[in-house]
Image (cartoon, rainbow, N blue to C red; front, side, top):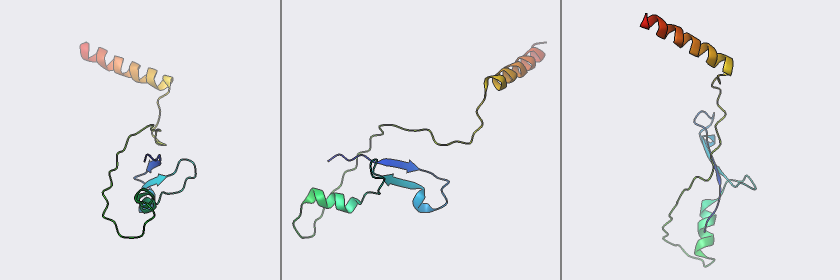
Length: 92
Protein backbone atom coordinates (compact mmCIF):
# COMPACT_ATOMS: atom_id res chain seq x y z
CA UNK A 1 0.00 0.00 0.00
CA UNK A 2 1.42 3.36 -1.00
CA UNK A 3 0.31 6.46 0.86
CA UNK A 4 1.42 10.01 0.18
CA UNK A 5 2.04 12.54 2.94
CA UNK A 6 3.59 15.94 3.35
CA UNK A 7 6.47 15.99 5.81
CA UNK A 8 7.26 19.38 7.32
CA UNK A 9 10.49 19.82 9.25
CA UNK A 10 10.99 22.99 11.28
CA UNK A 11 13.86 22.71 13.77
CA UNK A 12 13.07 26.18 15.10
CA UNK A 13 9.41 25.47 15.89
CA UNK A 14 8.22 26.65 19.28
CA UNK A 15 6.83 23.26 20.31
CA UNK A 16 8.42 19.81 19.95
CA UNK A 17 5.34 18.38 18.22
CA UNK A 18 5.57 21.02 15.49
CA UNK A 19 9.22 20.35 14.63
CA UNK A 20 8.37 17.35 12.48
CA UNK A 21 4.84 16.87 11.18
CA UNK A 22 3.33 14.39 8.76
CA UNK A 23 0.09 15.38 7.05
CA UNK A 24 -2.29 14.07 4.43
CA UNK A 25 -1.90 16.30 1.34
CA UNK A 26 -5.65 16.50 0.75
CA UNK A 27 -7.18 16.73 4.23
CA UNK A 28 -4.13 18.05 6.15
CA UNK A 29 -4.95 15.52 8.89
CA UNK A 30 -2.14 13.75 10.69
CA UNK A 31 -2.15 10.05 9.79
CA UNK A 32 -2.97 7.43 12.39
CA UNK A 33 -0.28 4.87 11.62
CA UNK A 34 -1.87 2.22 13.86
CA UNK A 35 -5.09 2.52 11.87
CA UNK A 36 -3.22 2.19 8.58
CA UNK A 37 -1.48 -0.96 9.80
CA UNK A 38 -4.82 -2.38 11.05
CA UNK A 39 -6.29 -1.82 7.58
CA UNK A 40 -3.47 -3.88 6.09
CA UNK A 41 -3.95 -6.70 8.65
CA UNK A 42 -7.69 -6.99 8.17
CA UNK A 43 -10.74 -6.86 10.40
CA UNK A 44 -10.27 -10.06 12.40
CA UNK A 45 -9.97 -9.45 16.15
CA UNK A 46 -6.73 -10.44 17.86
CA UNK A 47 -3.19 -9.37 18.58
CA UNK A 48 -0.71 -9.45 15.77
CA UNK A 49 3.04 -9.33 15.62
CA UNK A 50 3.68 -7.21 12.55
CA UNK A 51 6.72 -6.03 10.66
CA UNK A 52 6.40 -2.60 9.12
CA UNK A 53 8.69 -1.46 6.34
CA UNK A 54 8.82 2.25 5.67
CA UNK A 55 10.33 3.32 2.38
CA UNK A 56 10.63 7.04 1.91
CA UNK A 57 10.96 8.60 -1.52
CA UNK A 58 11.12 12.39 -1.74
CA UNK A 59 8.90 13.42 -4.63
CA UNK A 60 9.27 17.18 -4.30
CA UNK A 61 10.97 19.59 -1.93
CA UNK A 62 10.04 23.18 -1.39
CA UNK A 63 12.52 25.73 -0.17
CA UNK A 64 12.18 26.69 3.48
CA UNK A 65 11.08 30.21 4.29
CA UNK A 66 14.55 31.53 4.80
CA UNK A 67 15.20 34.95 6.18
CA UNK A 68 18.63 35.03 4.62
CA UNK A 69 19.37 38.15 2.65
CA UNK A 70 19.23 37.63 -1.07
CA UNK A 71 21.74 39.46 -3.19
CA UNK A 72 20.33 41.70 -5.86
CA UNK A 73 22.35 42.50 -8.99
CA UNK A 74 23.53 45.87 -7.62
CA UNK A 75 24.88 44.11 -4.50
CA UNK A 76 26.66 41.59 -6.70
CA UNK A 77 28.20 44.37 -8.83
CA UNK A 78 29.48 46.11 -5.70
CA UNK A 79 30.91 42.84 -4.37
CA UNK A 80 32.67 42.11 -7.67
CA UNK A 81 34.11 45.65 -7.81
CA UNK A 82 35.35 45.33 -4.24
CA UNK A 83 37.05 42.01 -4.98
CA UNK A 84 38.55 43.39 -8.19
CA UNK A 85 40.06 46.35 -6.31
CA UNK A 86 41.51 44.00 -3.68
CA UNK A 87 43.02 41.76 -6.37
CA UNK A 88 44.51 44.74 -8.21
CA UNK A 89 46.07 45.96 -4.95
CA UNK A 90 47.55 42.51 -4.33
CA UNK A 91 48.93 42.31 -7.88
CA UNK A 92 50.55 45.76 -7.67
